[in-house]
Length: 391
Ligand code: AMP
Ligand code: MG
Image 1 (cartoon, rainbow, N blue to C red):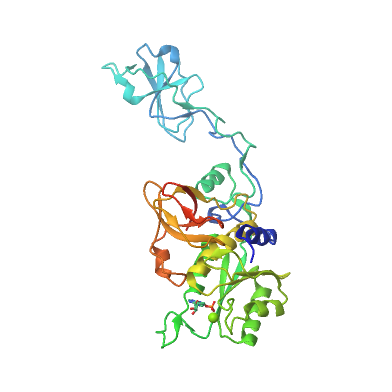
Image 2: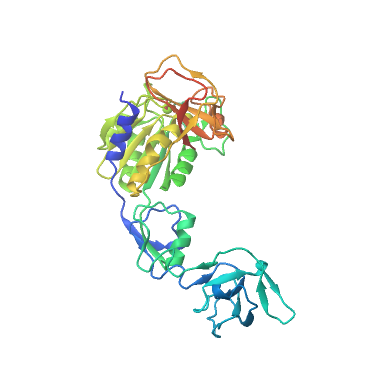
């Protein structure tokens, strides 16, 4: 049995980077940039009014001002603004070259003569200067960035309509067990519905991979071997759940080996999920995850998700958050890291959800995160800071 940190290191060190492809910027959310993005223009591209008001010279704001033009957004000013003159201007319009200030409409009064006078006290210019945010040629996004919606806006403004992104890893999901039936079927006595395949598929999508379901393998070595072998050839990551414990039909590690997978570990000191198995094949990295749905869920979040991010070339890993425990916690044995589903309340305190063990899938639906209690630690006092992975 190896410690969790060691298992994570082995998994992420085994990562190979997926290739790159050019994609449209507006469908790149959740992808990882494979190149730096530069702007082809200054931002803002001209001296831009930040408010609706009157563009004028600062030295004139004590005087009555004659309005010489109205400048809508998208039009260049046409009439020069002379001494004791101004132009009515809209937010986002080009400020005339002669003006160094825009007075807000709220700070002005229109006189019977049609002239305006400044009544405010604000000394602000209300002008966003050309290039003050970004200069043409500046880098606006860095290779390795996991693209968020706000990055899409930056790409749009920078004129970057196609980007190089890492390919998403192809990930195969296989379930194993004679007792499993598809969700549409009502289980006969002794049977249970396959929930792992669907949970893992959804986790894979959320993590950025492209999942494919290879079906339920019965507890038959030959059949399992055939499916695993095919999945390895066709994918970057293969996950098979069930069949990794110590039971008579738990031959997944053996099948992995026969398929040419070099087994790198078969036991991890994590509760739940100890029998988690991992190995490398030249074509794919292969996980044998425990059949219990809570264990399989947690092991995916702990080991598979960081691998997917690494394979996509993501600069940043997963940031756990440090939060105070909302209640005292203790356990009898501390030989493994414990992963406890928790609720995070409004003040950030974490409290374990009701949890009956690793088959209790309903517990996870109430949880906001997984609290990680390090190996060697028997208890946590209320208020003590713990590491939580959001789920
Ligand atoms: P195993 O790892 O094959 O010994 O399975 C451990 C437990 O998880 C058993 O109770 C299985 O019935 C259950 N299990 C295995 N695979 C699945 C699955 N795909 N969906 C839901 N439960 C499963
Ligand atoms: Mg089984």
